[in-house]
Amino acid sequence: MSYYASDLLTGRVALITGAGTGLGRRMAERMAGVGARIALVGRRADKLGEVARAIEAAGGAAAAFPADVRDVAQVQAAVDGVVARFGRLDILVNNAAGNFLCPAEKLSPNGWNAVINIVLNGTFFFSRAAFPHLAKDGGSILNILAAYAWLAGPGTVHSASAKAGVLAMTRALAVEWAPHRIRVNAISPGPIHTEGTDKNLWSAAPDLEARIIRQVPLRRLGTADEVADAALFLSSDLARWITGQVLPVDGGHWLGNGVYDWNPARGTAAT
Ligand code: COA
Image (cartoon, rainbow, N blue to C red; front, side, top):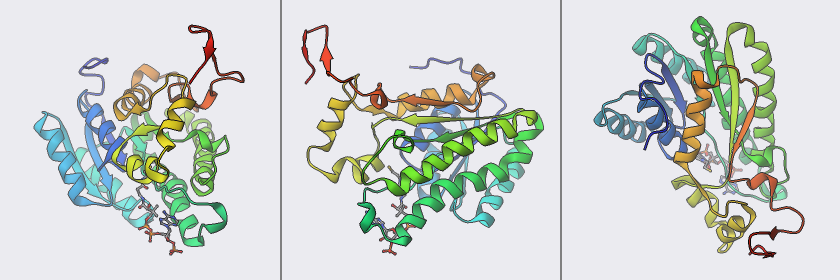
C-alpha cells in the first residue's frame, strides 16, 4: 500500500546510512518506491548489495557505497562516489546507529566511544560532507533520535548522550543552514521490531517486550514501514516548511499512559 504519489521523489538522490538492514533498508525501499535514486551506505558490502538488488528488482535505482560512518575519509569518499555516480545529492538520512543496553558503571570507555562515534560523530561527518551538494538546489537532512535523548532510559547512557547531541545538532544546523535551503529534521521512532532491535534490545529480558507494549498508548510495537512513511514525508517537499523539528513516531509511547493509566472506554485501569 502506498500513501504517497509514486513520483514524490522523482529526480532526487537520497543517501541513507545504515541502509543494509532494518529501518535503514525500509527507508531506502520506501524512497526508491516513489522515484528516488538511492545511495546505500553501511559497513557491510554484502548486505548493501542485497538491498540494492531488491530495489532494482522492484524497478528502482540504487547503488552501494560501503563506508564506516566513524571514518571521515570513508565518509568523504562515499559522498564523492554518490555524486560521481548519480550527479547530485538531495536527501541525507543519518540512520546508522550502534546500541546495546549496558549499566553505566559497567560501560567501558571503548563501548562509550563506539556509540558516540557512530551516532554523534557519524551524523556530523555525513552532514558536513553532504552540505555543498545539498546546498546546490536545497535539500533535506533527516536524523534518527530516540525519546531517551530527553527522557531517562537506564542502560542507554551512551546512546542517550549521543542522541541528545544529535537533537541539538538537528536544531543548530536547521537554523544555520536554512539560508542554504537545507531543512534538517529528526524522527524519534518508538519501540519497533527490526532484526537489530529484536537481537540487541527486546531480548535483553524475557518480559521486556510485553512490559514495553503496556507503556505504549496504542498498545503495540511499531513497524519499520510506519517509521519509513514518516521519514519519506519529512524528506519530501510535503514538509517544505518544516525544519528543526522532531517527529515522534511511537504510538504515543513517550507521552506514557497518564498518571492513572485509566481507559475510559472500559472504565477500568488499562492492562
Ligand atoms: N555490552 C557492553 N559492552 C559492549 C557490548 C555490550 N552488549 N557490545 C559491545 N560492547 C563494547 C565492547 O566490549 C568494546 O569495548 P572493550 O574494547 O572495552 O571491550 C566496545 O563496545 C566496542 O565493541 P566492538 O564490538 O569492538 O565495536 P564495533 O565497532 O565492532 O561495534 C557496536 C560497535 C558495539 C556499537 C556494535 O553494537 C555495532 O556495531 N552495532 C551496530 C548495529 C546496531 O547496534 N544497531 C542498532 C540497533 S538498535
